[in-house]
Length: 197
Image (cartoon, rainbow, N blue to C red):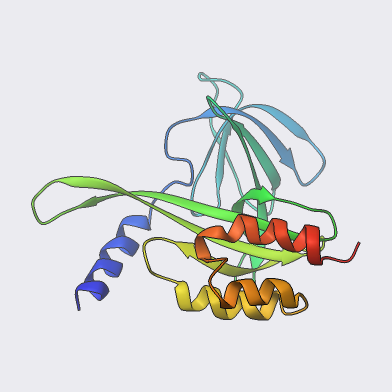
């Protein structure tokens, strides 16, 4: 019962969460018509991108119909977001974690939320969901939810099916040499030791 209540609170807190919660960042926005815009942008979990040329400029909202990708320049790193499709759902804005042309690619949606506790205090929850695909397509599948113990069974079942053409990797997952938290290493292993060029 406590787990169910926890999940409800988590999901309610994520409803209006931003992918990158801080502020507008210097950005390069790539539109579907080939136009490239330089300015500042902020991304949201709903899939929209708010863009402005500078602080005084009016904000313009873009989505998967008008935008292709956005590059955000954070203080100590650069993050690239693009739209990918989860089967049966509309395109979603995801951060590119690893992209290997023609091989396995890894994407992530990281959500920040502020949740109120019974004590009256609030705290921030961060949830990262990983998605993968093969080749250059836009359709992805969910592979892992990095939030405490949730999603372990889904990860193992999905990973064993997705990487079934690599017996060595399957064995490492079965004997727990590779776990859910190792998803980036799993993708690297597959592309280096299993994928056919």
